[in-house]
Structures are given as C-alpha cells and as structure tokens.
Image (cartoon, rainbow, N blue to C red; front, side, top):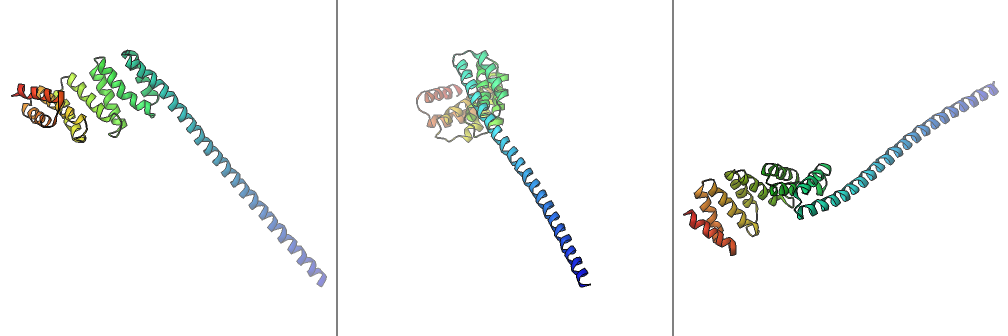
Length: 222
C-alpha cells in the first residue's frame, strides 16, 4: 500500500515537471519570437533612416550643382535658359534650399524678361513657402512690388513697400530706399499727400544720391 502511494506521488511529480517544462519551453519560444520580430523591425527602421539620409544628401548635392549652373546662365543673361533651369530645380527639389531659392531667382529672371505676371507668381510662391525669415524675403517683396508697378498697380505696390519698411530696421540700408519707392508709387497712384509724407521721412535722413532724388521728387510734387 505504501509502495503504491509512493509510485503515484512519483508519477504526479513527474507529470508536474513535464507540464512546467513544456510551459517554460513555450514561453521561451514565444519570447524569442517577439525579440526576433523586434530586432527585425529595428533593423528595418534603421535601414530606412539611413536610406532617407543618403537620398537627401544626394538630392542636396545634385540640387546645388544644378542651381550653380542656373546661376551661371542667369549671370550670363541667358534668361530663357535660366528660367527653365530655375523652374526645373524648384519643381524637382522644392524641399531643398536650392529649390526654395530658385523660386526667388525665377521671379527675378521672369521680371528681367518682361513677364511681370509670371514673375509676381514666382515671388509670391517664394514668400509663402520660405517665410519671412528667408534670406531673400525682403528682396522678394521688393521684386513683387516691381511686378505690381509694371502691371500699373501703383497703389498695391506702394502698400506692399510701406508694409515692408515697417518690418525693416531703420538702420537697414534698404529702409530709406524702400520708403522712397513706396512714396514714388503713391505719387503715381495719385496719393500726393501720402507720397509727400514718405518723401519727408526719407529727406530728413537720407544722404548722397538718395537725398538728391528725394529732394527733386519733393520739389516736383509741390
């Protein structure tokens, strides 16, 4: 009787050991599968980051080369070819620095070609995409005003320039020139009082050729 109980207890312990071993094996296998899956996901993610970085570096290098060529065309006054090049760079590398700056130079190129409507669109795109802190932000606004003046929208050009002057440091060399151009467009729009007001500000601070120009403008206005 005692011997039978011992055998049953021994079998019970063996059964429990088998059960624990099987569960442990299943846990290890499941955990191992999850770890392997996690490693695979990590490797794929790292690989994607590296590939993206590589593509961006290549894109930046290629866009810089194409931009340098377009600038060469612009400086040589091959305006038609330069406009095509700047358009391609802006479309192809819009998120790269060269792509953004190309929109500004496209505006300058089109304006030099006598296409103020197209140039205005290019300047507006540069301003909207690059933002106020962009290196050519103020220059693009001045270009936009030039387009508006060429289209005989003198009041619009004057307003754009006056608002630009308000964002410039009074010590900025462009400040007085922008104010003068705003006054000149107000004068062309028939707003002589506003033109006289801005001319007066310029006359009080300007020196050199600008002083001479604004003095003549004031004398003719009166």
